[in-house]
Image (cartoon, rainbow, N blue to C red):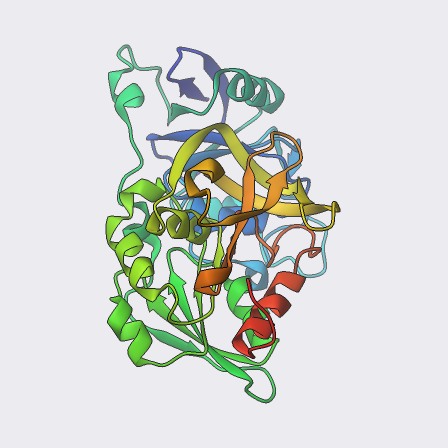
Length: 354
């Protein structure tokens, strides 16, 4: 028996899964009906205790080919954990994955109620523990810090193009998902993955045809060094930013970001394309958003969230740059917006603008 203790004093009792550790994190939820492996291996979840709103998790086991990166989340909450997966690709059960990677978790709790509390009161801190603490001050004072530096690579890595090489792309690794790399490789790009602490001059010295700014965890305002480097990269090469890369670009151009009440996480998030009026279903994982009014006259709003109207994309034609808050590389989630990678290819080929 173990507990999930929320900073507002709510207590949920359940059974231990994963590593036998007590840990504090930021409690969030994801609405995806599948893709738990991609969630567990998305570096953007650094510092967070993730609640799966879908009740049965682990039913297709663990498939390492589907991993998106190194596990960075601090805890995992599910209603029911399947210990008898049925899938021809399954290699082992999910509980083994959690234990081996030091991720504590709970099952047998009312995840619907946890999600309801989070939606109504907003994201809050929580603790997975064996005994309910008498003092919640440590839980309430927890802050996710040094997120990007904790998940980025330590040295540049090169990934060859699939088939004939068309372009070379510098991908800034703020916690990049592997499918961003694969999406570029499939389009004939050689990808050089640069650590987040790489100076702009080093990136430009490699003379890439374009620059991608990856997803990543944490508060974008904390990334002072990365924002300064993006400011020096803008206008030098075509740039495409995703998720945290979208937020950091906005900060580099004088914009502002703010924390959402409970964020957007899951593979079923609707986004409206302002150019066509069409709504796309997207994969998302973020707790912060860009304030588009802070970029009036600098950027052009291109996508908005169909649920709450928040900014989901901006273009900067004068800078040869466009960014989106959602994940066009999916993994998991729908691939509806993969065409944005093709738009980036056009920009590098001189055929399009932001």
